[in-house]
Length: 276
Ligand SMILES: [Ca+2]
Ligand SMILES: [Ca+2]
Image 1 (cartoon, rainbow, N blue to C red):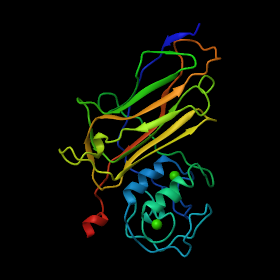
Image 2: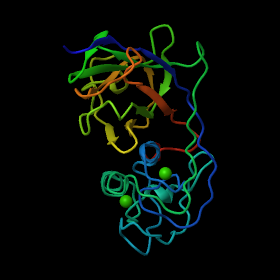
Image 3: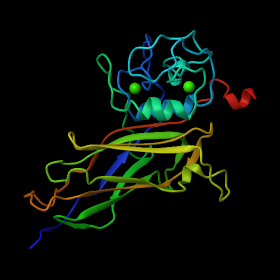
Image 4: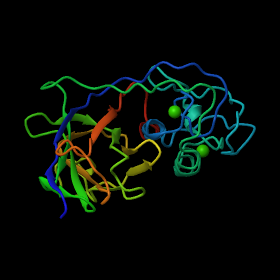
């Protein structure tokens, strides 16, 4: 007979942040914040740098090796590197190619000794909640367990949303390999245009399951130069429990958020749109 158990609901809090300070050297295509690692955080930076232009590099490639920096572009990320880092292929413009070939293509690669990204947890009842909620209160061995992911609540919405990345970890010893899924909401609240029922398509989802570590990294990020206020479901996450495991129930799957970063757009420099 299969064991049936109740698993725990997690509550997590996220906080908008300012970009960390980082030193500039050469450009590794995809590592936009130049911390030595390509991950979801670089996708947030891409959304901020989208459509900016500046001097091209002498090398136009996303090949993973140190590329020479061009002359500085006119803008820097708040507290961080020059916008030229967002031009992963070095052609002088930040476009979808830089996201897809640079950041997604070089995802997970490292150079030097990576510095920890500036993940931060917020303060309870002050910052909006990132809530991972099981769809059912019971689960059984060998079956898929589904979770809904919510960001913000009616009583405490996200005031200015531009992007979020977070890492959900789970106990890999009791979760089936390659059985983790993530699906973003098709028309999420943060893509709503004003108070209309129309949605902006200038946002992207990303997720990657690391079976070695037992964690899935998720990123949802806009590139429309508009912060959104709101709250609600942002996606669904699921995994399958192995059918041949012995676990201490009901602590079960040990699903929790390991790290989170949420950003808003700061209007410290004009967007390409404002410049016309
Ligand atoms: Ca990085
Ligand atoms: Ca480019």
